[in-house]
Image (cartoon, rainbow, N blue to C red; front, side):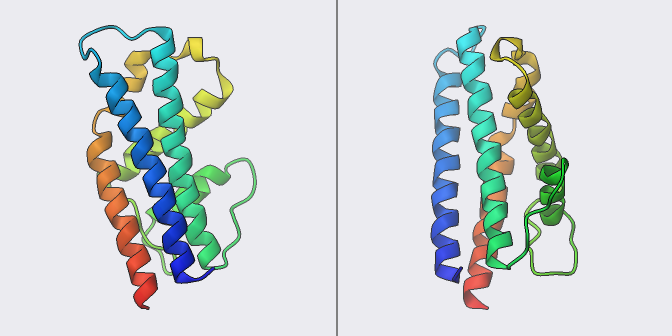
Length: 155
């Protein structure tokens, strides 16, 4: 994969993540004070799951670019995040700092719940902490991703 291909694929993923976040914002803005229906909570869950999947897609693109195999085993999702959280020696960028690393770990935990439970079991009060602050850390993360891509293009 060339640097330009990395940039194109990651920009497409970031656009999808941003579009999904806009859908989430629109859903939650409709009537900010009302209690969400089971359908709306399911939609929030779907959007959060899609955002996390997009984050993993971006991380996988950096692995491909550097010729690094995807982590294997049952805990590969956590190991994939660890590769971009730890400030380690190696070619992968550190993409998560401070609050964003804690938030993305919570989102990863939600991903597991979302994929192994029924939508009717989702609890809005447990989703709210995932939604609050999403704008800030997702924006910081997107900036870090774009900076990392730029560094690879100019290297």
